[in-house]
Image 1 (cartoon, rainbow over the protein chains, first blue to last red):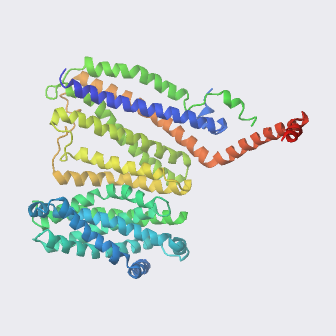
Image 2 (cartoon, chains in turn orange, brown, red; image 1 turned 90 degrees about the vertical axis):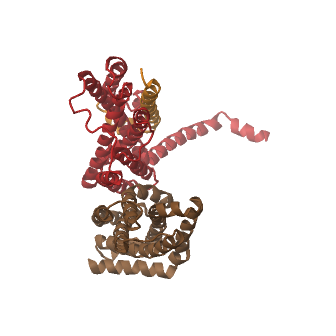
Image 3 (cartoon, each protein chain N blue to C red; image 1 turned 30 degrees about the horizontal axis):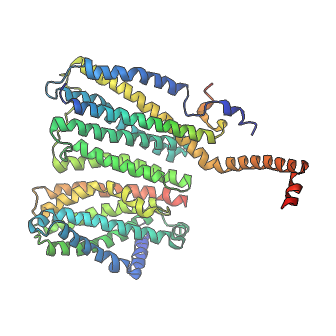
Length: 48
Length: 222
Length: 269
């Protein structure tokens, strides 16, 4: 494969950043959820 | 509406004139920038002449930051904004007035800056008319965007640091356009300066319109 | 307190059925996309294998513009209807958009190095425009972090969000005239010369990254919503909690003297 280094670097930066960002969002969501009563988390009502 | 604008502009300019911050601090600062550019670029006459249009407008943007901060500070002091609201002036007129005051101040500083650049960087002007018109149109655009973002950042604790990051990317097209136009006027680059004036004009008109409309929304809240 | 007690057992995160469905699509789609992009799709005649970078770069770039448009729509809707929901949409879309915009720049730069032989090309319109956009929305996010009255901040942020979208064409045209050149492929994905598998891979990339985008957006929206809840009701909740703790404390304190420990302590000292 030509330019293998560039291709792998590009994909890992891309997917890696998205994964890190997603993970940080989940963590933030967990921490914040604990501080808010469930009746004010509106998406919870549609969920069982 | 025009009368209201002139009233506001006159008020801002009078306050600014009495405070003398512009003449005592901002004007020396503009000269300082020119000297710093000279040091940074190794006092090479060729380089300085080639980059003079860009250096001029970067200096204008830096000075704009200070001038907008000043204008916003006037608004915050002594609850001036609330009084403006009570005075029953049209918000659009207030915006245009504040913008006009800023245009006058910036143009005064630009005259000084241009003199410094022409003398210290040894630049000769091929088309003075183009230079003057471009400076006025670009300054209207800068002042319109500056007044609008100044109002957006007013009353927030972090105004000094917030304003540059909001305003400078917005002014990127003006920097490009004005630099090209000056390059043409100074005969440094082969660009059609008069065509670039169109872009500067569109920018100025757009921000004047947005500002006039948005200022009402901004004044309401306080 | 009794109302919140059963909630403690409920899931304490920002997930829901819809995000789990999206998550499943992503979990299946990502390996498929990687296989398509790295193994099954052919190399390009000109770009050779560097074309494989475009399967992430192009979808991400398109989604950047989707995100910033969403910010503008949310901002307009907020000023029009004054609903907090739209303000939160604008805010979340801007943050996800900045992440995607940054990735567009980075993946584009990595692609440009082998293809154009340079990391950065000032003469390229889309490159410079995207960089300016990135800075504009970083400013927007910085503004959203400023401590201020939520209503004031939302209103001003909406104005900034609208201006941000309005200046996209101006920035674009200024940069275009500035250098009057572009290295970018002009509509390379639509000129019909592409192999079917290349097009299909791009399509799958768009779907998978679109799912990732939506997943991030939904979670970001819920995080913003929770932050807002804490901003507006947090003090009340905290006070209630404290009061409840205090009541428990009083009960213990009242119970204390009954077993006679406090008087005996006092006697010792």
